[in-house]
Length: 316
Image 1 (cartoon, rainbow, N blue to C red):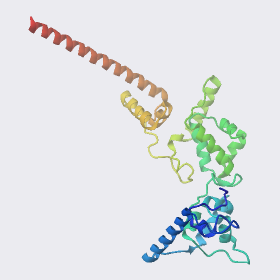
Image 2 (image 1 turned 90 degrees about the horizontal axis):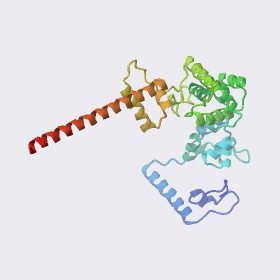
Image 3 (image 1 turned 60 degrees about the horizontal axis):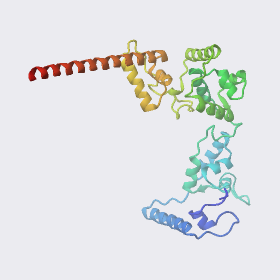
Image 4 (image 1 turned 180 degrees about the vertical axis):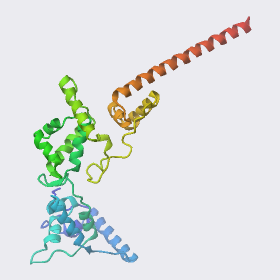
């Protein structure tokens, strides 16, 4: 179906047809049913004294202007709201014959417009947006070992330009989207450490992030990372205990494996210990379990031998 064609099963198609200049209203079963549903709803609202066919257009018009400043033009806003460009144009600029902009609109029209929220995902690539989410994503990747120069290369930028971009309060929406894509791809992936050079780069990145108090991807909830006022999730990193028992540490890590699907690296970060400490806890726990299993088996063998001897003594 063409993008500007009204769909079947709507009152708009019943009254106005498939689109401007495309014929009379549709009388198919779906469109008739939609028209009856709207009429029934209207009658009920009138009966209950709640009928409000129109609302003030001012808030919706102001919201469209704010969206435009955020890089979302009125035509794009109309598309996102599921409205015709003509209706939105009349709301902003008026109609033919110097008719003024609409002063009242349908409640559902206002709701659709006010429901659009400006974001880097919706804005035009050249629009400036807040840099908080972009900066936090880069910092989070650095904490898990991705050098900033590597991230800049992934974004198609020189390290110097990339670093300067991250220091600004606003970045281009296109840059924000690119960094988001890189982050979504790498946030749960450790960089290669196949040789001495790569291991050194990873270590420098982690140390650089630690010295600045940056937090890893696990610290950020999806609804907070882009919010300039957002904060890392409470309890994302438990305080390290000086003498945490190996069995307790291993049990907590295994719970993260089952419940959250964490890798050992992510579990170590979440539990506030080094990966080597977590690996040592697993080895000690496995050894303890092995010794306990052997002890249980020895007790079982001893109990069986005792029972056999008693049985033989009674039989003799």
